[in-house]
Length: 160
Image (cartoon, rainbow, N blue to C red; front, side, top):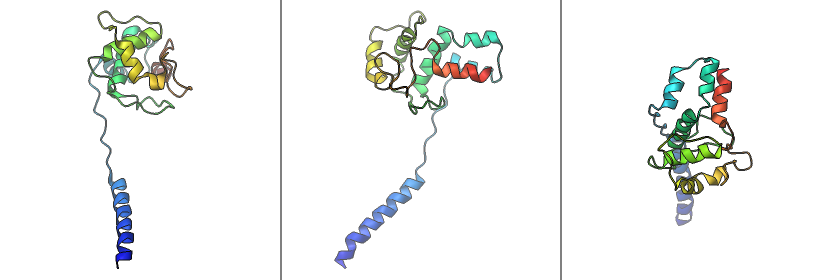
């Protein structure tokens, strides 16, 4: 009987693990708060005019877009490198990192949001996928130095 006790224990552990794996529930991401980015998307669900499309690529819109991705992640953007979970950078530091990313693409940041230490937060939280230069590693992660960020370009293409 003792010979079979170890075998029965192993089988029970495997069955219990299989049961738990099939019963695990994924918690949905929290609904994004209203920002200029989400308000714009909610207010314009149909194809906008050319003037509106040009506003998607402004530094102000891009700044809020970057902050939204930092806070909520990139799960809806469909990038080949996978999903970036939101919250890697705290709310207090997100504005500075958003400005740093804007500078990588040659844009100017809204006044009063720049922080001197933002490059350190970028290096320690973002560079693992986007590289220290922001160009994305091996083409799997978005190039943050593009004049129009890839997620915004996808929005513009979808609205044409």
